[in-house]
Image (tube, rainbow, N blue to C red; front, side, top):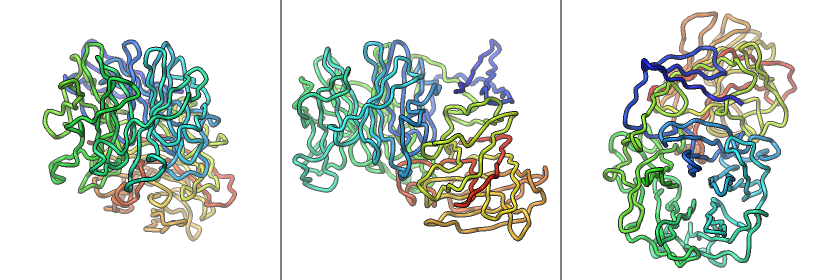
Length: 558
């Protein structure tokens, strides 16, 4: 797999290149003593973090996308590099037939005695599992399933010679007192065999204050500091009422006392009309740095209006302080800030692509493998793409993005509210069912597809909107070229604009001001963000055709 290379010269110029990229972009270094939130833009939800030596490692949910669970590395908590994906082999991760918002939920990473451990849930799959590795970049082991852990969001806690697994589970005796009534439970765990020991213990019933009927206590982590064990968990559901709460005990098995000033992190009480809001904050994890300071990573969302957002649940970071032996997110007020001072005077390198801030990145497919950040929709069981001579060739297959299949779709997260993706494609067909182009995809029933095809025996560029089990043609225009075409999708808050360029002409509008809210979580539901994709399909019919993409460019203007 491919890593990015960053070189900083003595005269203050960054030379940054991806080894899959022919062009080397040069940008001025803007080394500042603040980092920008989100620290990972786009669909990187449910962060979990651990420290090993002087490095930090962070993982995220991927639901029905493959490979599963990106893993990032940093030596300063500010500059993050993706070093791999935990579940990157088909035998590790079977996603066939799953809804986009099923699959891999809330992984949690730990480091103990030279070994990295990760536990998580594959919803509608094998459920809870554990994998391990001696190198966080992989390879990671095949999953060991833990059927006794009935629930979601497991995490590990190592306490002297004992290990525990803590997780979200059903109410006591399986009888809820109200909708959303859950518990946090814990087993002792044999880390060598990957098996639970004894019976589960209920640590939290309902949430921080059961008299208020708290909803969906989940995402638990246990920490030990001084004389206390701390249990931190999300509460309120993962949307606008999301929050983080904390409990403590002098024994790992409890009883746990709820902090009287819970929640320790939320934005639900703020004016929704405030400028540049960050909403739905929660599902946090905390870590102590080399200098005794604490930091918390958590998910949040950036709406473009009201509570509409297409970038999904992103990863943010804020300092954490301890008050009367309780951890508090130190936001500098009630509002999560778009920037905070960097930890320990680390320098934020203003990179030209990938993680946060403005960037332009042009992928020119120079190497034989895609970089770690690219996504497939569900698990590919055959190799239907190849890279050679600066081109990625993708077989036109019957599978459709409207079905719960693995279509000929290679995706890149929408990381911007304002920005664009564009591509140059060679595709020729004589069949109206064969199509190739760019898709902006949220789920099987919520996506836009701009593609080249044929209509009435002439080549055309088309724009479709997905419906249940079908596609609605919004517009089509004739094109001159029988083969090459450039396509562009521009995001502008609540709208997408679609452009094409024929025979080296300038960009021409295909359709402007297309409703972006159709792809928002608010309308489409689920837990994922929108994904741009190179996508070709023969819509259920056999095909021997191939689409070739010469480059793929992302411009992030946020």
